[in-house]
Image (cartoon, rainbow, N blue to C red; front, side, top):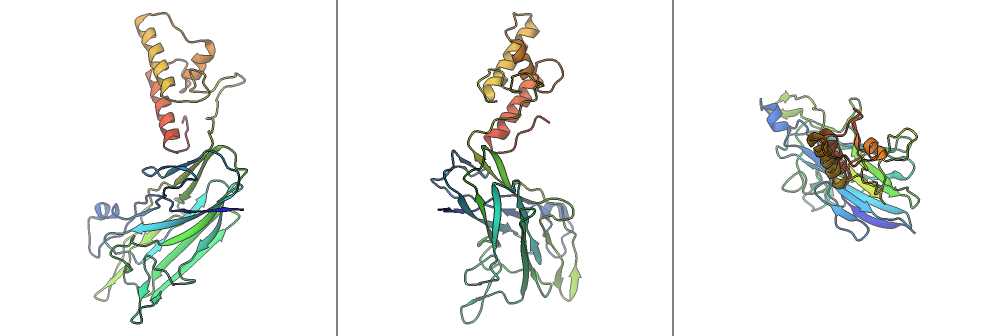
Length: 306
């Protein structure tokens, strides 16, 4: 039996949603963002600031409903188009988009309440798709008359823009997984700023997004070793099976001994584990990279030594 969670996933997108005649494009563009919020749940540990959830173990599939919000304080966008996908097409799979246009009975970011009190999507058009081959989704809502979209609530993010569902398989291996907004040049999350005012069209180009997404951590993923046949984990200087601040402290202590001519303590294996930048020595730059790596793991990002 599947467990249904209400998950409001997160990402921050910088986009160009400008007021009609604003010439300060860069300053205004930073005001618009796509994001997700993750609610507290007994099913996982939550770090709301980084949108990172941790699941210690899985004994059944989990179906997650994620709501995407769009914050546009200038209310100048006439077309909004989030596109998102999962990093994994076997264990964390996107299964469904809940299009508000199919059954406009609940408020969404740009729904309209008519004189009869009923919700409608008059004056708007949309399209959406789920691509099972690439484990991706997209949704677009636009104004048919070229005017800026009018929020249903007091702000554009008072209600969700779109929701979708993804499933975490019970057999998902320990590791880090992401649901993220796409940012490739040809198929990226964006909003358009063409808007009509006094029968004139003011056009502003799309801006490439600055995005981050929901990170899911299953169990205790082990960072990859860069050893070549040696039984050591790069960065794990104290050999406790993980990379953390304690390893950085050991590297700094050993580097201090090197600088002062003291008696060195590292074994051959520890020297290799400590030399994370592969320059043949252990020093403060290695300690710094170990801390960066540990910081990525701690905040749910996918760590890298690059």
